[in-house]
Amino acid sequence: MISFIVLMSIVICFSAILALALNFQWGLGGMVNFGLAGLYALGAYACALLMLKGGFNTFFATIGAMVIVGVISGLVAFVTLRVAEEDYFAIVTLGVGEMLRLVALNEDWLTRGALGLSGIPRPFGELVPAEYYAYFMLAISAMLVAATVWFLNRVARSPFGRIMRAVREDDVVAATLGKYVLWARVRIFAIGGALIGLAGSLHAFYYQYIDPTQFSTIVIAYAFMAVIAGGRGAHAGTIIGAAVVMVLLEGSRFAKDIIPWLDSDQLSAIRIIIIGVGLILLLIFRPQGFLREYRLQVELK
Amino acid sequence: MPAHDAGLHNNRQDRPISSTQSPMLSARNVVKSFGGFVALDKCTLDIAARSITGIIGPNGAGKSTLFNVFAGVTAPDSGTMSLGGRNIAGLRPDQLAGLGLVRTFQISRELGELTVIENMLLASPTQSGDAVWRLLFNPGRVRTEQSAAIAKARALLEQVGLWQLANEPAKNLSGGQKKLLEISRALMLDPGIILLDEPTAGVSPLMTKMLGETITRLRDQGLTFAIIEHDMDVIAELCDPIYVLAEGRTLMSGTFREVASNRDVMHAYLGKVA
Image (cartoon, rainbow over the protein chains, first blue to last red):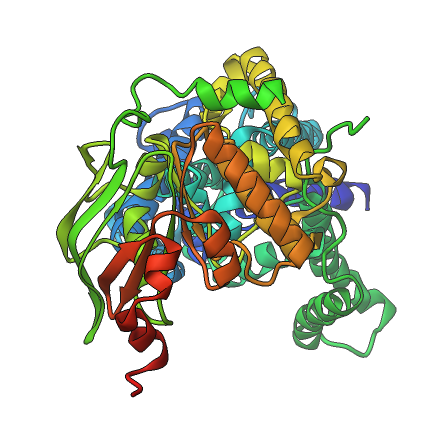
């Protein structure tokens, strides 16, 4: 049971980073990202391939994955928003995400297609004894979540954070107040993308094996649920949201022991139902989510 | 009001706006159509420095489109525009804001989820914290600039009686307060010219009076205003000269008395009677 909790906590950590990235892009910046699953896959594959084919160590592979996903996200935002209205942007992200998934599935020479990539090295995998590795991984993941939140809080409270929220509320007003909206959006998407790359790298380290089925579209739904439940724009809330979603998802496996007449097929359907019902209840009774985004308060005297 | 005065007069040197140049903002033969509808049809208009220029006309005359074109929100199909003698065609809204031109909107577009003070700070032009890397490597500078911006915002908000509401999300303000916030927020940019789109629409008479006083005071301090307005009392009291727009063209311009006694203006407003 303890080891299950540790493993689930690791999953919560990298889900939380993924949800935080979405919260940054959509919750604070107002940019819908339906390509989240594809970009998450890109992060995991980039990290794995940099190690397996590029000979990078785990640290630089992670940095590399962050840069790759960040740059590609920024480019997607720049190329799309330069010519199209923001409404089309959501559709473009959907297309990009699907494209990335198809590349992972079909470019066998690079990704080994549906067979997936196995034997992905882990950070300090040779140094840490195998029986303690889960604890070590949890410690690293938790530290990365803490660092991510620290960084995001910093940005959210800064002038750039205000620009993000202004662009979300009304981009024309932000522009007439002297803010270059296109550049702001490119940065929002690129920074969020880098975090998606980080989450993807942790995913690759944790499973040590990745294949395209791990990055199905339902990942996007979970991430949006985590952000909505946590409260748009609230970082701590997003982590709670991610934890709740993951605990409901993974924890409901144990429902089999409590309710013996359910078989595993029924159970997996019920897990999704539980999350759906939970989200509906939340939207009815606390539509703003668990927490609220940071607002600057000044002393009035 | 010393803090505010300082704010207004330290306009950066590289700005093309100066009160000695006239006209400050001008449009020549500007055309803008939306599909088959011609919103601006060779519209020509000058806004003199340190004036409060009124722009009136029936609905659909092209007034708001003119403001959108001036502010870079909408690109004109043809024609030229200049600000302080500089050609401004094709500039983005944020570049125009950097040159000292700001517009407000007919229906106030406060940033509802941001507090009043955040709305104000957003518009502050000097913020190194706009760049993410400076947050991490030079947080002291970001903090110093923020305190300076808060002091400036405070001076502006106190003048319009909004300081006590500084921590309130802007969506909670009344209609009149939102209008005052929009103008105060525009002033954070140290603009040379402000385009006000129906500033008194939906505002109480008391608040309208306060707005009028604020506008006059700011003009006396060196600002230029162009105002779209339907309330003729406001136009009569504040504006000189007044431009009448109809069907995307400048019908005439002059003092309120001249405009009010003109037969063509009557026709434009009321249709061709008698």
